[in-house]
Image (cartoon, rainbow, N blue to C red; front, side, top):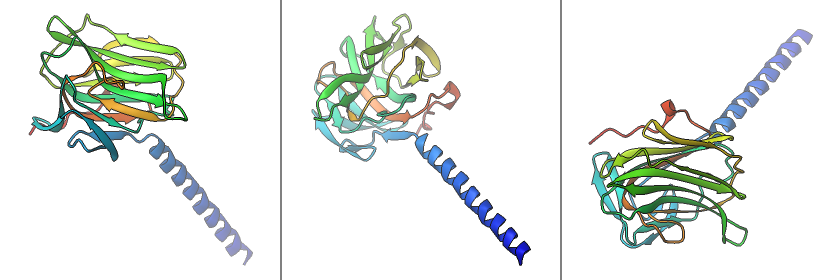
Amino acid sequence: MSRVFRISHIAIRSTVLCTLVFCAATLSAQKDAATVWRFDRIDSLGGHPTTVLGHPQVIDSAYGKAVQFNGVDDALFLGAHPLAHDATWTWEVIFRPDADGAAAQRFFHLQEVDANGADTKNHMTMEIRIVDGQWCLDSFAVSNGVRMPLLNCKLTHPLGQWYRVTFVYDGKEGRNYVDNELEGSGEAQLAPQGDGRTSIGTRINKTYYFKGAVLTARFTPRALPPDEFLKFPPKR
């Protein structure tokens, strides 16, 4: 009887331990899970309802549906900051910058808000600059007065093509990429940002409109290496 009790006790302990390990692994996987926004409609993104400014259009592209912005007054706004509370992160966007846009354009803006819903100074942006008929990537983050600008207009790219741009922060260093090519890097101690809101197609204050299209965005709460970056969908 005593032996049966000991075996049962060991079995119960093993079951509990396995359950705890499974739960810990599940929680860890959920914590590291990426958020993906597909731009195949304009009334919602990632399950969040949008506020539509102007007349952004859902278009068919070689990679599927995307949202096109006119560079004048088109934009989408929603009440979520997908990288809020993340100490490390990877932010990826598949987009197409088009010709004849403004010299400086903000195509994606993540904005922290305070307890009253007012914008703070903490934010992150994905931007482009037009130089000699081509574009260069500008990634920017500021948190509690610490700034990280990553802009290298010695590396330019043709307009009218699809690219994946990536902004990575590993807790010490930020890096940005066009496709798999490193464009810039810099060190900074960026505190995690709080909850907030997002604009696509313009800066959060409705300036510096973007002319082009956005296909997909992915937000991951860890720093990804280039071999784990978001892959382009198959061409259709």
